[in-house]
Image (cartoon, rainbow, N blue to C red; front, top):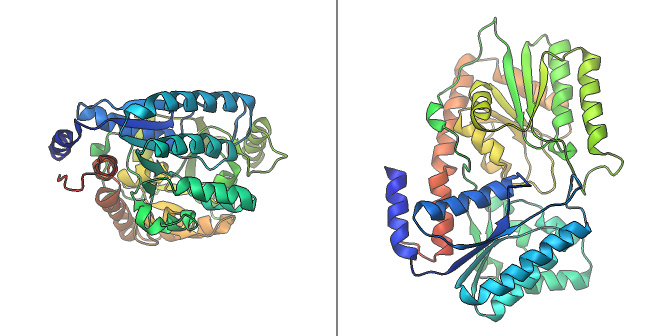
Length: 401
């Protein structure tokens, strides 16, 4: 009822707006950015409003995120051409922005064109790597970035901890808006309940749910699992879910095939094929089942472009205590010893210590689980996220739920 009242009240305020949404398609790039864009489009559909949409398609053959290719150039030119056709007839331009050089050039052309036609321009950064991208450019290119982003009306980041991503933009205090991520998929969180530790005859279940990118820390978790079983006698099952992939900031000597081989070799060498299980990408009922059954969600990430991982939000929604890092926007999702544990990066022992602490007291564990659900409901529901974002796009702060 609350959600339906929200969508009804919102629909009455925007019917006279002409809105263009530009963002990444999840059809061939399932990521937090593309799933969030899908959620925004669905939010408009639920209030019976159909904005204009331009999908930025990424049809590259390479599995390396952020890499240059002629195919990506073609995809970007297509998006630019569509935008130039549609912008003159719109009032508001919303766009998810990129932190790669090719992506910026595409964004720049769209932003300047929209500014020339005096449109409201709302830019949305879903990660946390823009400052690193900016600092890695020449002084001349940095000037171009500053002048381009200054043409925006608002720049959306995921939380206060990511304010510094745009410290260099003129009048940033007047532009920046903080809108945390929200649950994006149609997961049935009604089945979520406060969790308890497994009985002595059951295995502790750990869950990794993200792309298997080296800087996401999946190998660190693997090492921790092996040591927990071999050195500490912990009976556990660790489920790894996601696609193996690389980014331009990862070790250039790696490739996806070698990643897979190394991962499975370590598991086989330890003789733990029945306890450390790779599932590939999961969705729907299988994903819900894993989220319900997990005792801890572990993401020891130091990924350069991290923001507020959607997988952490999904785990919180199912009452799963989190073990993650003091990195980018994560400390706004995970409060140390409240709904999980924050650890240092690159250290399997930190994961081991957090798990041993987490299983020491059944009462304390259940409190972590209860607080995980509360933190999700207070800050990261789909309704809260869409209300904030659509209200900004439609320039209506008086919408009430």
